Image (cartoon, rainbow, N blue to C red; front, side):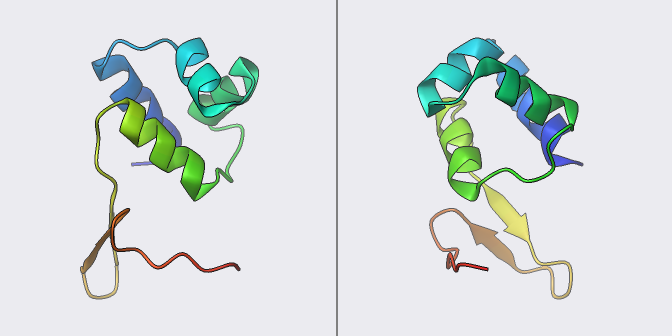
Length: 80
């Protein structure tokens, strides 16, 4: 599933408005709307982490090569 669809799904499950999430993470509501519509492909990990926290979700990434799991608690963040 694409990140934009995940963001929309978890927000709707918690019945939170886009404007409320945008305000809480410190961005414009139209920026958040663009994220959910898939108009912006690059979203900072920290912003995804904040959205997950707001919506009471844990972030888990699966490594496609060996199916190992990384989550926001054990992922090693490195600058690209």
